[in-house]
Amino acid sequence: MKQRLTEGNVGSTLVKLTIPMVWGVFAIIAFNLVDTYFVGQLGTEPLAAMSFTFPVVMTLGSLSIGLGVGASSVISRAIGEGDRQRVQKFTTNSLTLALTVVVIFVVLGLLTIDPLFTALGASADVVPLVRDYMQIWYIGMVFLVVPMVGNSAIRASGNTVTPSLIMIFAAVINIVLDPLLILGIGGFPRLELQGAAIATVISRGMTLIAALFVLHFKERMLYLKLPSIQNTLWCWKDILYVGLPAAASNMINPISIGVITSILAAFGAEAVAAFGVASRIESFALIALMALSASMAPFVGQNWGAKKYARVGKALQLSFLFCFFWGLMMAAILVPTAPMLVGFFNQNPDIVAIASRYLWIVPISYAGAGIILVANSAFNALGKPIPSVVMTVARMFVLYIPLAYIGGRFYGVNGVFAAGCISNLIVGIGAYVWNQNTCSVKAAKKAGVVVIGNRK
Image (cartoon, rainbow, N blue to C red; front, side, top):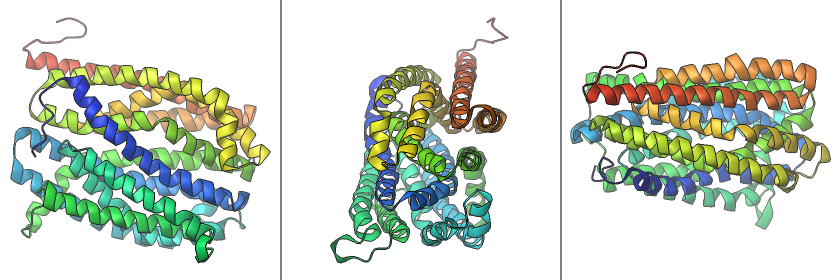
């Protein structure tokens, strides 16, 4: 409540918010990178098994992100309005909502492991490996969802340093545990994929404890009185108004990746494993853009709640410009270094060749991908989740999947990868135009100017 984002230079404020988030996002990605590295030492089949889990893990991770987005949106706007008790009620009820959702999905997940991953294209040899990983991961899902929502609440106050430190601490724990539990180093049992899941659950459990501690003792954002059912449902309704569409929007991406994975499965386990490795390297390349989009949420929410619309428009312009230059820089770096980066995770020449082709084609569109991330974050913070859903559906279901199917039929894996590039570029342009028009109209209305088409 003390950290306000409604004053000061817009650019420097965004930098102060984003730099800690870069390290926080890096820590999250480090989970996947480290897991991929050590599982890659086990062979192609375990690596393919982990690649099959990626869409499902990301889908449920996206659910928690969506709930966090909903919580952050209402909390940051309440902070901008200066309503402390409302902030506390929203924060507390966002955690109870997350816990309720976790219980439902844990039960569903444990009952559907075999049929789900068989439908995704996993072979009879790979499904048991997937089961070893996901049975443990599902049980530990509470340690994923609840702290992610809690960290979103902390960021809504303008504090991006503490959530980043929590994520870094968890990543360090995971990095230490992975070789011990996956490979059995240091006298520990060799648990392979089960070890990767256990390491993730333990490290995420640490984030749950830390997030609750910070929310209660440092930020004073928890409401300790037992809320009435009516009050709880009212808070859940406001959170879900943004959170459900945001969760749906975030879940569309990994679901679509699951479809893309099944398309690639027709080209063999090497293609699936290569896609998994390339996707993780891509996540690393997009760290700054993901951090910026996460930082935009509290900034836009607080300034929107305080009715400072011009600051929102300025922040968006600066963010889109950064996305453009960062995307160009990452493409220039990845094209010559792709084979070396892929080889770090797996030396199989087929995997190296396929993953390198991904990293030669898709990075051309990273600027568009960044603009989509920032635009979606801004719309959600404004309490307008529908545009994010529309853009995500258009990107994945209208463009990516149909183009990937056609491209795969005629051009193989290169056609699938080109489909991702094209969809990012087209929707990125649309996201920029839509977002700018929305903010310009709002700012014009505040200034008392009526906008009709292109005339004032």
